Image (tube, rainbow, N blue to C red):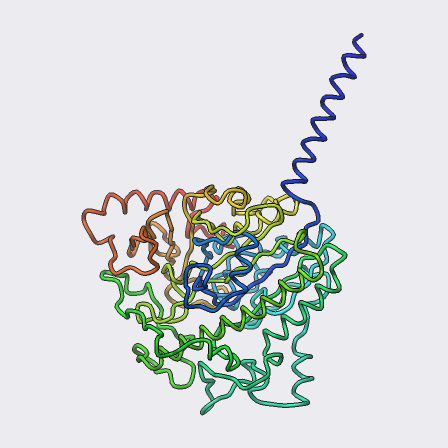
Amino acid sequence: MNKLIYLFILCIVLVGVGCSTQTKEKDYPQKQNVLFIAVDDLRPELSCFGSTHMKTPNFDRLAEMGVRFNRAYCQQAVCAPSRNSLLTGLRPDAIGVYDLYTFFRKKKPDVITLPQLFKNNGYQTEAMGKIYHTGHGNSDDKLSWVVPKWNMGKEIQKLEKITRGDTIGLESDFPEIKGKKIPWYCSTAPEENMSDAMVANHAVERINVLKNEPFFLGVGFIKPHLPFVAPKKYWDMYDPAIIEIPDRNTPEGMYPQALANFGELRKYHGIQAEGPLDDEQSRNMIHGYYASVSMIDAQLGKLLDALEENNLLENTIVVLWGDHGWKLGEYGNWCKHSNMEMDVNAPLFIAAPGLVKGEMTSSLAEFVDIYPTLCDLAGLDQPAHLEGQSLLPVLKDTKAKVKEVAISQYPRGKGLGYDRKSEIMGYSMRTDKYRFTSWQKYENPNEVVAVELYDHSSGNKTTNRNLANDPQYQYLVEELSIQLREELLKYKFLPGDKNMRN
């Protein structure tokens, strides 16, 4: 009798385990392919985010396939720190990368990157275009990929045997005046000779080859990074006469070092060393940016077509992210390199089979959340080092909330070279309504230099006044100062903790 009871209980337990396993496989489908798309300097000025003047039908198409995040934030608004943070799941302070010169493996040699985790779990991991930030002493991360990263240089050499000049569309072959590249250019080159078109075309080839095995395919587009070059047909999509020039005024009471001097742009021909751009320059810049975005939209369409043609839509997770935002003349400023909303807010799309489609969410998200989210979607165990949170609840219900704040940071001071400490670090916390930034000494975080408080409750990306200087907001400044410190403590270090930074 006791044996019968034991067997009965054992059957119930086994059935329960079986049900649990089935549920997990349904919610976190095993061996889902991952198409991982990075776009440089992409701000959320897209039709599917409400910018109806933009011609971006394929971004709209991707939006209908999944969830787009209206309030996703990078951890630092410059290429290398943002990308390294996202791909390792570590915040800039934890990984020790704040500049373009530090290769993350020098700081964290044993960290398991996102594509490396998929590689370790039997995926074919490949990359083309810009995924990690290479150059400036950085190399691509060989541990992340099953095969070496695709060498576009060889394709360029083939083209150079046929033709030269603007037919290439790469910065290295971009027209120059007096030794300086021009910041915008309406190209007469064939589109297939543009670097991003070459990346897209190769990605399509690899999708065709890899369709019968699990893959993690990293596809990185360079545009709309400077210089803004695109074929004429994309320029013709926009009428420059109706392009609006943003308000050049900076917020009243803004911390003087909150904005950079957009030195990235000033090295181009025709851009003065100091002062704002005039209306004609601004309009040309904005026009070129829009054209570049529409060109990238066309390349995205090729990737989505390849998934559809190979019957991969039902077993492929598509993630697309811009590595940070970009200012197009707001505050009289350009480029990124700040903690302002325009710089740290960037588009994020996640389309996962069987989950929500065609919705936008206002739930706060951070780029460090992408790593754990993909772990959950693919049924992989999350590494212990991850500092983000899975966004899976939001992919099931876009009204769900997984976090109260999003943290970004940017250094100011002596310089950003390898192993050099910046004098001041600005930590910026986005809440549901506000952006609070504390500028403090890097080596002595208790010494606060300045604070900023901006109201974004109406959904606006820019604001005209730093509320931290208003006596009626002092209570809120104190509350948010405490909250920011508590958030930093969650990651087991404080700003300025040398033990965690080394």
